[in-house]
Image 1: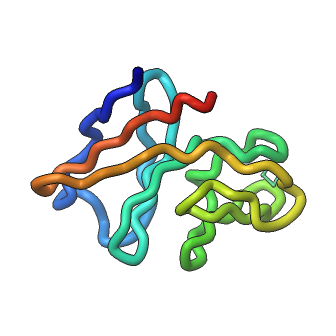
Image 2 (image 1 turned 135 degrees about the vertical axis):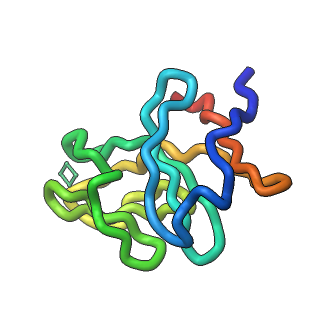
Image 3 (image 1 turned 180 degrees about the horizontal axis):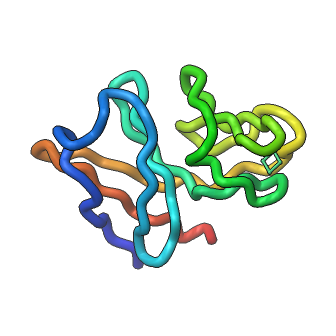
Length: 106
Ligand code: FES
């Protein structure tokens, strides 16, 4: 059963932006936006584009390859050409530390 893994200190992260991490052998992108932290697989479901290289537009992360949008809160694909969600991982913040729990829906 997956456990939370400490990945960063809040003070070391930009107030908004993306950070690529390796957690339990998965490459994920930690997104900090609107005061919240979210974590997605760093893989676009259209053709494996690196979401961490994409632009943030509010709570949307835009794939740099063909422009599909993903909701950072849920991983849901919001626009073509992606039609499937990317995997979202649980995040919690405690005492200024950020923790990620890798989804078991893999
Ligand atoms: S690889 Fe992401 S939109 Fe095509």
